[in-house]
Image (tube, rainbow, N blue to C red; front, side, top):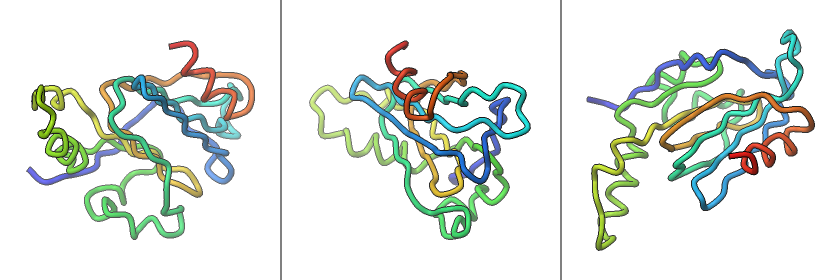
Length: 152
């Protein structure tokens, strides 16, 4: 099959115009993306998306005005408003190939990895990890993201 992005309903949304996105990751496989809650959300604590078993994490261009230039845009990202899950991910395949040089390489380790895309106003977060969960946390997005990794 070909790589494709499908919308992912996380049960929450975040501030679309000023999410103040912060992505924090550590070499223990933990990653947290904290965003300001949507202005219409009754719970104004930060939305924190937490991944475990992370193999790759980035928060990078393009912004919302150039999203059509993203390599996944024509592969379903155009239909995503908030978050998406990438099926048959080329990023996961590339990680598996890259790690074949390891003497104890086991290709099946990569079967559990999921590739997620999360849209923010100025950046796109892409995380390849084993699990994802959504939490809420008080404080700034920086405090919420770092706190999420301390409470794992």
